[in-house]
Length: 296
Image (cartoon, rainbow, N blue to C red; front, side, top):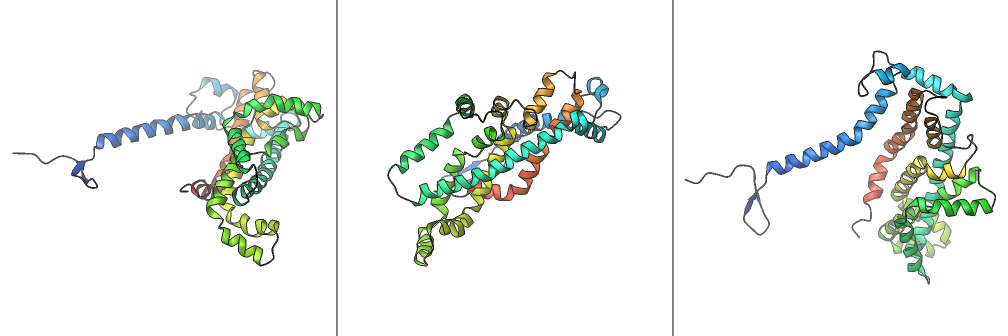
């Protein structure tokens, strides 16, 4: 006598029923759990280590708390080291990241809108150049930028980091794709019939429609600028202009002689907070902008 098959039976389109295998789903779940553990374990170590003092940092279990929670004391001491230089680094990072991301988002929206809605000679060549810039690794531009800024005498200034931060080839690409799919030509023609100029149409109509993609571009550019290390370390010699990434690495290279390791770890934890906060605030818009226009 034939036994009934085990497991749920699923009707395949245009064919006989097939049996889904629970073992396959368990394997996928196991891989996802391992990936999550691999990603979250360093974050957990960072959080735990930031709660310890110098002695407990090396004598206790690295993945669990010591007897005392010293994170408040660590933060207080960190903010007073070298006349509060860490606070200055955080402020510099905010200026570079927020200002650069805002300008880069606006420029990307304008460039993407023009490439999507205007026909002119060389449009595809310009767009292909943008695609090529996306494929090239960012570190390849560091040395040419240094030589260029050195010739113009803006090395070791705020502009040496800010100017490269306002260029986002990925933002231009995303803006063009989104504008082509989401901004109807009929809406633009209606604005022209009403007598609106091209810039007013872009400001009053296109920017409103492009808003989800603009939030996505801003978030990506913010994270890119905030985590950038090579460019500011190459351009800036003045520690009062450096972002937090460069400052923390400089402290680490001193092997704990000037700043204890527990304060460096606490500074690393605090440097992650703005990225997490920005992501949580813009998460809903980021998801919408990332998927919009992908069907065309």
